[in-house]
Image (cartoon, rainbow, N blue to C red; front, side):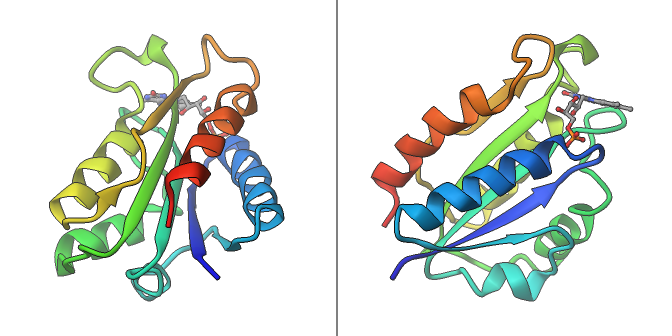
Length: 151
Ligand SMILES: Cc1cc2nc3c(=O)[nH]c(=O)nc-3n(C[C@H](O)[C@H](O)[C@H](O)COP(=O)(O)O)c2cc1C
C-alpha cells in the first residue's frame, strides 16, 4: 500500500490542524499516512520511494518554522538525490507580509525538493490567511487532486 509522510512546519498550530485533517483523509483513502511534527532527515528518507507532503506556515520574514528547519537544513547539507520521491507542498502564509516574504517557507521547500530531483505530484498550493479564513477550504480540494495523481 502506498505510503505518504506528512511533514509539518507550524508556529501557532494552523498548519498542524490542516495536516491532521490531511492525514485522516489520506488514511480513509487507503494510504498509510503519518504526520511528523519534529521531522528528522531519516524520517523523510523513509519515503524516498513513496510520497511526501510538506505542510508549512511561514514565520519571521519569509522563514521556515523552527520545528521544520532542522529537516530543511539536513536536506540542504546532505543533498540526497530523491528521483523516486513524489511530493506536494501546502504553503501557508499571509500576503500582507509582502510579495518577497509571502509563503516563503513553502517556496523554499518546493525549490529544494526540485533541486533534489524529487517529482512534484501536483503544483504547490499557497494559502493566504488574509483571504482564506479557513485554510481547509483550499487544502481539501487540493488534496483530492494530489490523491488522484499520487502513486
Ligand atoms: C510573527 C509572524 C510572522 C509571519 N511572517 C510571515 C511571512 O513572512 N510570510 C508569510 O507569508 N506569512 C507570515 N506569517 C503568517 C503565517 O504564516 C500564517 O498566519 C499561517 O497561517 C500561520 O500558521 P501556523 O498557525 O501554523 O503558524 C507570519 C505570522 C506571524 C504571526
